[in-house]
Image (cartoon, each protein chain N blue to C red):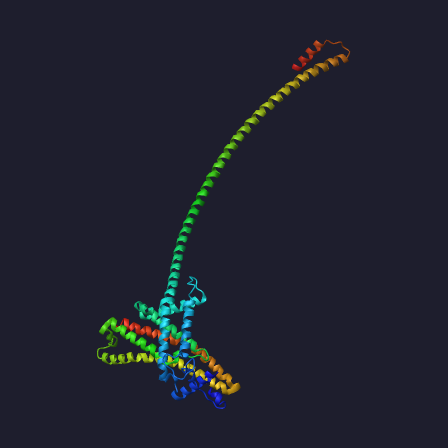
Length: 179
Length: 250
């Protein structure tokens, strides 16, 4: 507090005597001395520490940025290459697929043809067999008819009260059937 | 201070804020006495260290906020030196950066209420301006010898006019440190004094103090701008003078 009032008095005194403290030449050596000290200190701080450091950081950042851009460029090229390779692989795969499909189709066609031929052959065989069976059945049926006719004729003759000779009846029936 | 003694009258001492006072009492100010000049210059150094050294401690590729401010300041002055003085001026970049960063911080610290604006003193600005003037002149003579005098001899002008122009050029050359220093000190002093005057009005107006307080706020905004612009002007003029010393042939 005491020093403050003292300073105030000093200030008032200086203001009275000089008017403008800027023109109080008594303070010039003091100001110039401390200014020189300040500037020298700032100069050394800047030139020894701050400016090289900031310059290095800026240069490093510039380097990083250009490196990154170069890397990005390279990656882009690689991506384009990869895309080309992918397209090629896709085309190859498509061609392969077409080939496989054609092959499969041909295979299937072959199998189909073979199966059809086999089936046809089987059908023909079966038909022949059936034909044979039908022939046999037909023959069997004719045989049965003559048999039945003979028996019936014999029975009819017997029923009508004739003693019949089986052989004569049979021969008569046979001749009738044939005729 | 004065208004306490006579509270009734309107007593404004706008220049009291510029008085150089010893920090630790005493009457006489020797050249080595720690004064308020010492204090506020030391604070400027502290701010420089905080921003440009502590702020860039991380050396980050992706900078923190304070580091990007430091980089901005660096880039700003670097580009200014490169654009105005040319590539060969970059050798002197640390000197110009020193001047610029000191003036910027001194100006802004001076804007803190009740602080002391070191750059409002002609002793400070004239020392810097004279240092620039002498350095530029010596540099020009060392680099170009007598050829440095060709900055006064405008070969683009008609021959008859050249002596007249040379006279004007010589005068303007030697007036440079004066304008260079008074521009900065004058701007700082005027702004601070005007704020103080309005503050004096506010002290006696009672409720009516709203008007001067509003005026102070707007002048303060202007002074914030001036604080930066004057540092910029000082630095860019230094660059212009440096270009003259490096390339005296227009």
